[in-house]
Length: 461
Ligand code: HEM
Image (cartoon, rainbow, N blue to C red; front, top):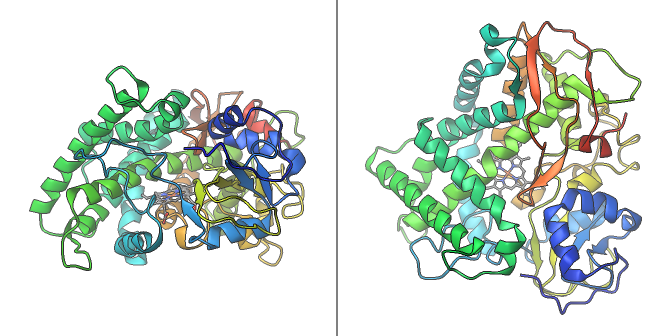
């Protein structure tokens, strides 16, 4: 996966290249912000100085170049999701999220109806219904503490199943969603990356068997849906669409897209909701501003500013998906980055630049209310940028706003009970708390709970 022969003439952290690469993949938010901090003025930072196998780009110009030149910076897929060839499930990870060039454009065009404006009214109803069945709306159980992160995961899983995929919210489908999420989580595990031997006893072999089980279940769902009349949801669209040659998509092609929806589509949204609610009901310990947030979240403009500010401060996906550099290239005037390098951009770094966001560690929703001084597009990218921007961004944005908007209208409001909250990388892509984040529903207007822990590395006042 890493080409360890590559050189890059630029400063970066010291250390053993392979060890640093694995550390970077497992702890990328922390590595990119803390270990690479002395080099943040460079457009390209090697994960190990002088070494070219893994690099981070920083600064507006470099970020723009990488996100707009998709012919030079390919989405790295195959090498991460490497499956044995010639099996029914070998194409399980071929999807819009991993494809490049014309194949990417074809798959993206095909899926666009799923997120068209006309689909949003339907989604809105489902999001509201899911909220009203959640613990946040359960006034009878108001004194009982519950884990808000787990509850948001339930909510966003239901919304993905019912909304985007038109599937029942059954135990079987939820199990499938959890299985697929766990497949993505294992991908960045060093034992799976480094030792790709397909035997029953290896971590890679066990991972391959779980992929096969998920594929079988997806194939069943696809077969069932093919028997039904066409509907508006993503599963129906991919089951009924035909390619340029007039052929329907194969089961393997459809399974690839479904896999991507499950792996990218609900944990990310749940974490966005978790970090947003945390910034509303908590504050870093020691900061001078006690009391409630004091903002009217039933006002859509205010809620929008609060959500964006929390996505800026604690992005659910703090680092881009990986790119593979396919030709030697200078990035924003850097030394040439060699062909074959793996490359990332980190929203968590760009979202905390003082030149873009004065007092970057302060939660200040009002910075979003003034359009004249608001950030430029390449300074804020919780969903990526350009032709590869998150396909589910509109679906997720609406879900977050409907859920938090309804929550703000509840008579009983969540009060945070957990005092220490971590912000740590999970599956190499998203940032999650460690352990439960307990809340209890109580009267509105409670003081924000002071928190300590990993979140305060990014949110200090
Ligand atoms: C708040 C929730 C979400 C966040 C924060 C998020 C974030 C992201 C990010 C950062 C990227 C990669 C950008 C890049 O590196 O170029 C991405 C890509 C993608 N996301 Fe999301 N996402 C969310 C929800 C969803 C949902 C609900 C779906 C669909 C069900 C989805 C499907 C995808 C797909 C298919 C791509 C690949 C797009 C392409 O390569 O053309 N995401 N997302």
